[in-house]
Amino acid sequence: MKRRDFVKGTALGAIGVGVLSPLQSLASVGKTHLESEDIAPRSELSNDYPVHFMAVGDWGRNGADHQKHVAVQMGKWATENPNDFILSLGDNFYPKGVTSEHDPLWHYSFENIYTDFALQWDWYPILGNHDYISDPDAQVRYSKISRRWKMPARYYSKEVPIKGGGKVLMVFIDTCPLIPEFHSSEQYRPWVQDQQPEKQLGWLNETLKNAGPDVKWKMVMGHHPIYTVGPRIKNYDTLAVRKVLSDIFEQNKVDVYLSGHDHSLQHLATPGFTQQFISGAGSEVTPVTAGIPYSKFEASEYGFMYFSIDQKRLNAKIIDHTGKILYQTTLKKS
Image 1 (cartoon, rainbow, N blue to C red):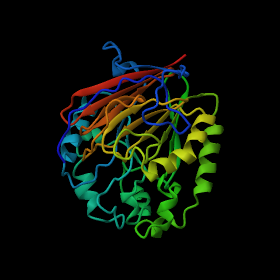
Image 2 (image 1 turned 120 degrees about the vertical axis):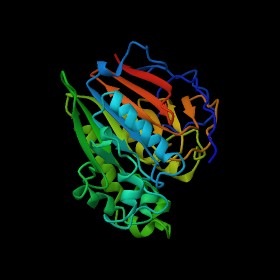
Image 3 (image 1 turned 135 degrees about the horizontal axis):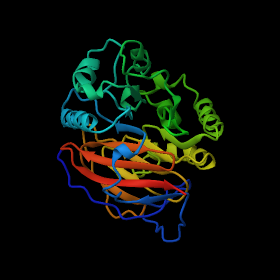
């Protein structure tokens, strides 16, 4: 697919919980607990932070359609900058997932693509809709074969210590079973029919609610966005996950929701507590719509994201397949 030039968004605010019209003005929205500086100061270097990680989604194409280009730049970035682990945001294997933990696609789309030594650290994956066309549990089982693929279940959580005190709570969810249409789909039903959406939502709510006082940041990773300025802005899947996740995010004060699915790079700030980042351009790009008020940045460009965190700051950088920083922002807690 042809590359498209990126367009920088201009809206201010924080992501919300209600159903918001894409063209609704945010002029009346007040500030939230997070203040966002659209372009972080140049002096704010990544080594000022104790926690660093990259995030890439929608990548598994045997190296084709710029997957290899993005992988090379991820390796260069992780070589030149601190990096503790990598998040994989679903649609890990196109077009139909993997059939087993021994599927050749593990080599063609993963092991032989992300080869830089700096990318041999832990990868924390989630599942996307393409991963549900074959056996999604094969990706869980691969954790017993690969030293770097860390996927203990279809959904799970981990706490990342922050040097100097505190933790980042990272919750990895499986959004496919949360979409009612998947349960009646001939394509997805065989692998989703035994899942219990309400059980997962209850687990998500309890995991967030029971976070200790030492948790400084709450982040949730799921494949499907709750808002987007890409082609799926009003799709059934976007609306479905928004319906079941928004209240949980708001009630539990989730700071950041990180997703893929739309093949672009976005930072969205709709009314409410949670801000959203979409990193779904690991191997293909699709169009974005400029001028939607809640978009702080959107780019139809191949690339990935890089996050740096301390007790009161979260810096996000959006980097394209040539290594250029397209955008960066710093979320600050008061």
